[in-house]
Image (cartoon, rainbow, N blue to C red):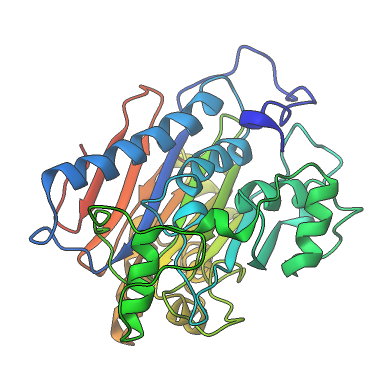
Length: 376
């Protein structure tokens, strides 16, 4: 796998080096769910916030030099995939059979300037039932940029991983994804003793720290806006704890757990009004969701935000709040992060907490965990 996305910009961006740095932004989430302040410790909260800041800095390092939204979002998500605190990659939860089945997706509002051969209608790539890819989000990026090898928008399992391995993706033994904390959650959720551990794993002494998000259903994700106005949404997850073998969640479902799109405003009245208000004629948005994915699928949550913005002319914040409230009305916990091409950001949630953060051109990362937290 290319290190640090170093090979991601093998083609020069199609913009001059005198670009404006005023508009780019990166927003991330690390999962939403039933974490509580009362059952946490200041030390554990600090660990999560440090991990979120590390992910924000990884994406910021791409954006500040004029890099693509796609590369910034993947860089941020890879940090969280490598961190056992989050339900993705190394920290993924187990299914009912005690296995890790990973999912991921990538979607762009428009093709990256570094790869002009990518057609606008390609949109993105989704992957599910992965068991051996160290960084699923980077695999999704690689397949998106390889239309001849992957003409389809949705692939699963060993076939997707075999293509990725040919493209240089790092393949690991499934045991790589094991973490003791998630294994204990898995056993506890099935009403079984927390030990024994699988063969080859020795229990920690003392027992590992408890994750803030017990029995998680959430994901990690990032949405980035670059200096060219391109938006990318990248999401990655281990799914929900003790899911049925072969279950597919919202993370790889276009329109449910993620979305990115741009459109031209129709009608001369609307275009004139936007011009008066200083708004762009082309509108764009990117969304990544986290929470109980079954409900995101049933409500088609992510693309509903875009449709409300496009047809009801709602601002991003109003549209995002609507879908999160809609999830709650049918019993779905979760939240979304979203960015439009004006640099507006929304991060609503309907549950006790959502790991989240934002970084803008000033380079100062701001994070929060619980629903009543202020970004700081």
